[in-house]
Length: 220
Image (cartoon, rainbow, N blue to C red; front, side, top):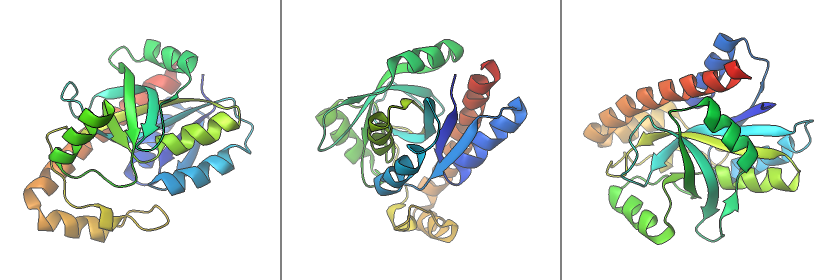
């Protein structure tokens, strides 16, 4: 069904690799950094590989109150704050939905250039763009792989709810798309209640991500 999984480096990558090991799958893992620039660089490299179908995956923030942390979301399309909606591959997305009966399909996603850390800002983005979820990589991947003729579906798992405030994590992301553990710990220490919620929700979301990827590749 898919030739490769594209995932940000770090905990999300580790969850994906655990799923592939459990399923004894030979699906390739392609990693990228966090953010649009890192995803665009990854797309250039992916475009040179002998792939036909790829799955972009990882965690996302929830903009719609209809969804909760741990929900598996299959994107219908993705846009940026400057660009119109770009459709993901409908055939591949439908095939994935058939193997993930608990997943939420038809998701309108928004890619942004900064981590959305305040509930108020999430509400503004929801109202302005009508998006259900937000991440930092899918637009660049979808745009780059479409130009290369590679079918792409996007599966993301909600890691923070629409009403959740987060620690200020932007300072933890380096220019090359890496996230520093010490910087994350420092940001969480500044807002301990939000940090504890982030950690708890992260565990839940990563487990859901691992289960979803396992189900996809096990059925392949």
